[in-house]
Image (cartoon, rainbow, N blue to C red; front, side, top):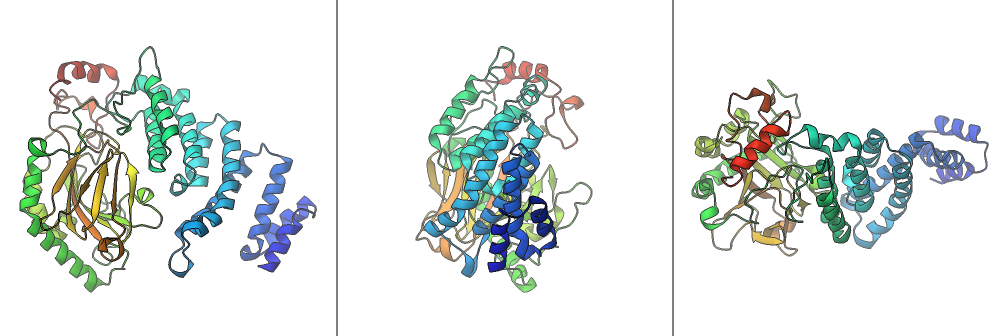
Length: 462
């Protein structure tokens, strides 16, 4: 370490060419500090070198990510973690802001934000991240998608504004989030305002004006919720058997299905892998959120069904709910989620507000709660079977546990999650209109004419 610091300090006084040679010749463990010192010196001489700026952002981002990823004896929390993050994030921020002001190239901006900086760090520098997303979204290339894509598709400007809002809201930056929300609603394209969100708490990338409630309860609750609750014991039996197989196979303590399913593999015949990380960028810190996809992309995943035979048998007759095309590939799915002990899912929006999401806690849910648009519901009611909670995914939603709940420390949380596509949503699109459906069975309209004509005639019914 002393040698490394000496070399790094020498970068300021050595001839630049000699310092650059030393960065190549020195071993990686010794020359790392020297390399960044030389990089910073080069940027002082040529501040407009955006390639080197991106390299500096990547270096400092790796340092910050290492602090966030530290586990066990090396883990840091609270004030100490904040102190260790301050320098690398501060330096990364300086370079991020320079690049943001220096270029209109949205390809470069996207590469710097997602490649050099990285999605896991968005929530550490939320306002800078949101400014990148906003600038990309306001580019002419993105705005033009309001004229070439329908309300049922991801249009670039709304997509980037939605992501920026998700990051700001999850990080607690309410004032800049509301400013951006108002700007999105006021945005005009060819004499109209195409972003039609109705609520600050519901800002997905694909938004269709439909009936919304934080939770769909009472008469509004889908019938499949009753089916899930009546089959709770069968679902629990499948899970218990699955976990026994996992234990016999020697699955790791933090993994979900280690040893039960094969390791990562290439999809076959277009099918998706069955056991994957759910949405790792939405989990706080080093949390684990895994999933087993039982039904997705309009297909039952037979290998997963074999692992959950009672569950899949009970729900097969209920999925798919209709032959309507899907807004996204996962607009209708059946998933078993695992949230590892102490893990928290950040506040987030789904990609679309079209489906209805249902959640039924199966195990480890004591003290757990779900927050949707500032409304909270427990995932497990004391002395009762778990309720099946229904909601639309476009609303801001997060999952966590009470600080003193046993599940926050010791037991993994497992939730059965069907996502339903409302059968009347796209009934205006005939099955023969092939131009409206892409190869995944998702909505892909050539323009606004079809969707706007349908929308006027079917809005009230939807």
